[in-house]
Image (cartoon, rainbow, N blue to C red; front, side, top):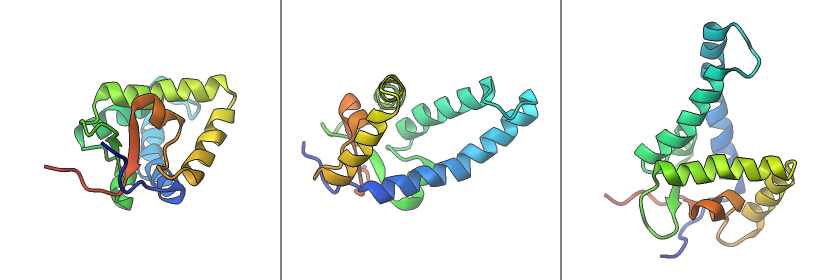
Length: 137
């Protein structure tokens, strides 16, 4: 299956910013109330990880921010996005960005801006892309 209607850099960036505001800030406040620390703590780390893995897997590739913008994560082969796919995309992709001291993240941003299919490094790792198409029933 081919990549169809890929979402570009600005839509993806806006969706991530909305996720940070709508989900990230409340998680941080709850984490502070639970742990008493505004620093990164076990609660915010766990909640953000679960959000990144579970929500797209059960909500057809959407996160709250992506849903607000009208984009979603889809598998290149047409399959359903699952927790394993999201683990590869979020966790393994994050490790790659960490190991490369953020250079991989900059390269990914350039890839999304310049490539016709708008796929980044973490999309290639997981076999995904971000699209404006609605999921099929």
